Length: 282
Ligand SMILES: *[C@@H]1O[C@H](CO)[C@@H](O)[C@H](O)[C@H]1NC(C)=O
Ligand SMILES: *[C@@H]1O[C@H](CO)[C@@H](O)[C@H](O)[C@H]1NC(C)=O
Image (tube, protein in one colour):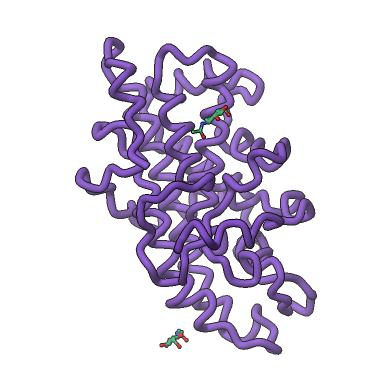
């Protein structure tokens, strides 16, 4: 049932979104950087020389290059909102997180591929926390026309960047200070239960895209679409006030999960058997 829905959504994110969809990714990378262990900071510095080790800047790369074969890796469409995501064959964000986590963790991956894997992993973990990357409705909200602060836009853009930009402005903070503000105001997220390691390359690595995607699917039915009143200005009708904290919480959760994953990879014993890393359960 699940896989039948996939062909319907091929042309999902219009290219225009990527020009603006940056503050969310930038923030997840920036906050994650604060949460890295000292050895993990050294490791990412060495792996991302073109960004001077900045996860915030590296987090944008996957949207900037976006080769056609990678487009379906930015999202997944559950059969319905509110359903737990299940392991299934897909060429989607779930399999992409599994694939690039594996390649990142494998010490035999050559540098260019490991550099690319890190940039993809950071980006896709951000995307899976943006609930509209886990909703098939109106092509992830890109075709849901709404009004935000007197501006005609789509629901997808409201969640990608408009609410975060508005919040930054309202607080009068730089992006860097806004990242700090979010880190101080939201708790660390639910850790990945060790039993749900589907799509995880190894039981010792905390990659848990099914759990993360299910959280987003629940947010879709509980808030993203449920509280939407068409014809009102979402910035002023109460929607923003309800949605912003959920979005901010997701940004912080994504950051913790990116950092936890990188810290775990760096701590892995150097003689870890690459074979065990390659057992992705799809
Ligand atoms: C994993 O990523 C590599 C590099 O982008 C790609 O060539 C390969 O097809 C991917 N494997 C799967 C199973 O998606
Ligand atoms: C959001 O929508 C749900 C479902 O209609 C409703 O139960 C809930 O009270 C709404 N939340 C807010 C804060 O308006």
